[in-house]
Each structure stands twice: as C-alpha cells, then as structure tokens.
Image (cartoon, rainbow, N blue to C red; front, side, top):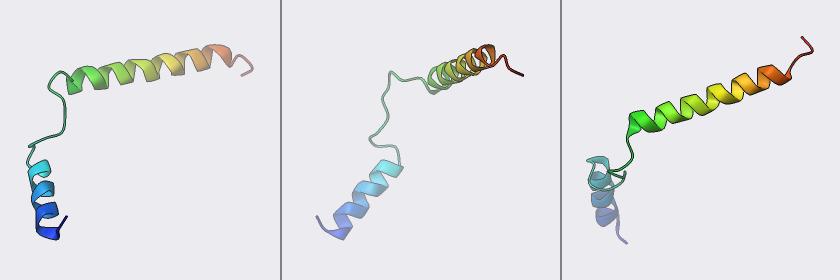
Length: 51
C-alpha cells in the first residue's frame, strides 16, 4: 500500500465516510456508561462501612 492511497483512506475516514454504526446512539451509550459507573460507585460505598 502506497503513501497516497493510505492518505486518501485516512482522509475518507476523517470525513466520516466509514466507521461508526447507525444503530448506536451516542447519548444512549454515554448514559448507559454513566449509569453503570454510578451503580458501581454506589455498590462500592455500601461495602465500605469501616469509615
């Protein structure tokens, strides 16, 4: 693979032509991750009774 073809593919990727999945909603994914992290934080603080 030559440098010009690699550069063209990278430009295409940077412009949004490829990558990502239409069914994944960024807000839903971020909200789900936030919920899981807050749940883990709550569980951790419930088990840490020695304070």
